[in-house]
Amino acid sequence: MSWLLENWFGSKESLEQVREDIQDHLHKETYLRVSGLENPEQSSNRVAAKDLFLTLHGPWGTNLDEMETELLQYVHDELPTVVRDEVGIIPFFTNPTPQGYLVLTFIRNATNRDVVINRLPLALVTAEGEVVARKTFDLMAFGPIGDMASRPCDFMFRWDEFLRVPEQEVPLTLIFDAPKEKSALLPDEHKQTDGLSAEEIRKYEELLGENPQVVQDEVDLKVVDIVDAEYGGLKVVVLFRNGLSKRLEFTEVPIFVRNKQGEEVARVQYGLKNMKVEAQSSRLWGFYIPADSLKKPGVKAADCIAHIPAAKRENQPNPITIEQKGFIQ
Image 1 (cartoon, rainbow, N blue to C red):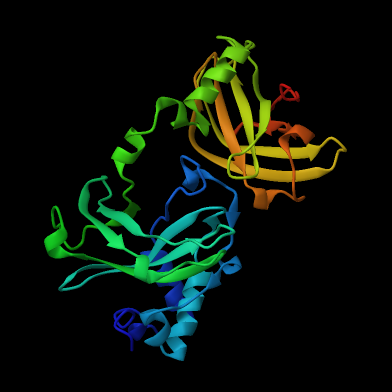
Image 2: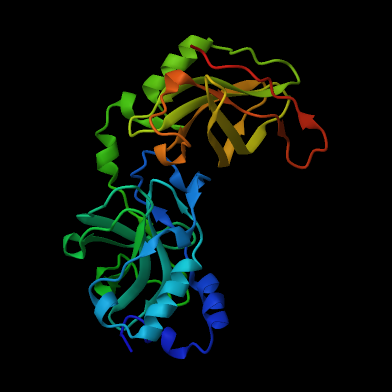
């Protein structure tokens, strides 16, 4: 039995028990933000785990017997969906050992290109958000991760590398520890806010005016622009307007895109978290539609019209009327 799995697979009696343990040990996925999305975990544009090809290299390819390989494939296929056009790291088992804290993960590449990771900064945090360990892993020898592929990878945080060693029963979460100094060096006009750069925010605010026609007692979502995205695909800019006397929270936004011939080229449902619009105010938000989500190749924003269908407010029997307006040319 491989040392990588002996503390887990060695005690399993059935696939049902493995399924239960997956849910017990599974952590939230952390993303490397290669898509350009500020908060990729909030995206609903996702790929099923079974749509990724599991590849086994190094100790994972040579030290596992047939049963372990089958179990690893089973674990992989039971994982939740991964954000399209992103690279995610999802822990499926953690184990405190005498040497340190071992985290077994899958690195999942849901992009259409091979990915090579040079140096990967990761951290372990408590449920309260305290960072107890930081470590940068050299993954050059790990090799490339193929497009639409997934590879198991283990990360060991040695006890003497911890900033503070917590009690053994304290659960720890693995996160991508993106260097803050890197983002601090970006000029203001390139920093992302709500999927839009500061420059884009200024542009649309000037275009719409200081008070973009918030109507008393009405709520609507208006597509104000659709542009070609920097990395392919499209970006749809939406104006949220809340004319009610209380703050609203939006959890889902469906966007349909058609070409000028009326053919549908994209239909995307976005999940939002902490998307709030204060009473009697408005908010701009940019939604990225990757090229892989377009039904036709070579789609250009200039040839498209984006549309948001009527929405219903959660826990309310009466629908909120959404004005169907085109985008600003």
